[in-house]
Image 1 (cartoon, rainbow, N blue to C red):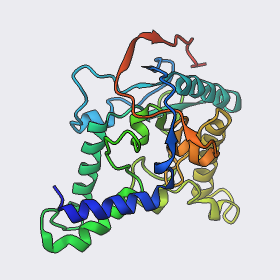
Image 2: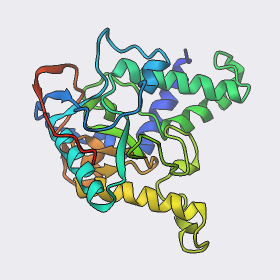
Image 3: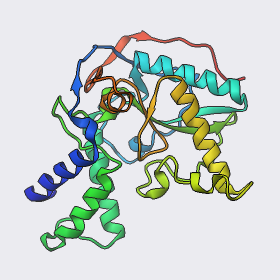
Image 4: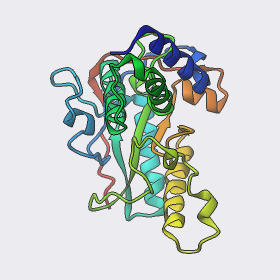
Amino acid sequence: MYKNEIFYLLFLQIMKMKPWSNLKINECKEPLISIPQSIFRLTPHPYMSLGAPYLTGADPWVLRSSVLRRLIQAQQYLSEINPQLQLALFDAWRPISVQKFMFDYTMQEICRSRGIDINNISDNVDIINVVAEVAQFWAKPSSNPLTPPPHSTGGAIDLTLADMTGKILDLGGEIDFIGAESSPDFYKKDYSKIPCSKHQVFQYRRSLLFAVMERAGFVQHPNEWWHFSYGDQLWSWLSKKGYAIYGAALEVSKDITISEPSLVT
């Protein structure tokens, strides 16, 4: 889709903006297992709806076993703070083929919205600018075992908050939005300046989501209020662990499940 020099500049931009990509991985070989129905998820799955190339019958709602246990803990912590709220999953494990599909889809959509011909060599500068922008939010769909996209490891999850009827709360920005509003602390500057403003509500909700996920052992992506990780290279970098414990996960376990009672109260 892109010229070779654009791929090269893309790689340089991503490595510059993602300093965790060169961290060592000591794969612990934990299985990918299904997320129980007690954890609410948004359906239909947003990327499947776009035609992302999941394998026939593949279940996107899977995570590494330790990640899943921590996610269940986060839901319990949230229930203790506010029993009227629940976590709402947007995306979990993402095969590299889906990562490539979504990276390309996002590139195409942004170029289309800005009147940029993605295949026109004369638009190189504009395309490279879009690549750099998209690369802040979407990991390079690399099959290199040393640089797996976070979601391909089964250690990353995108999520938000919902009430107990399944209504999604407004956190001041859509998941996957490419822009400054996606920064976790985008509304923090207004938090104490304008009492009872909608920005104050947005910041409170983002802070609540962060608090329960952090308590369960997750780290938050610096550019994305919705993205949390455990065990991958981003987690290793932010928690200063020295190495990641998850590389790309290619196969879902058919034999291991976690059975949890309903968390809906």
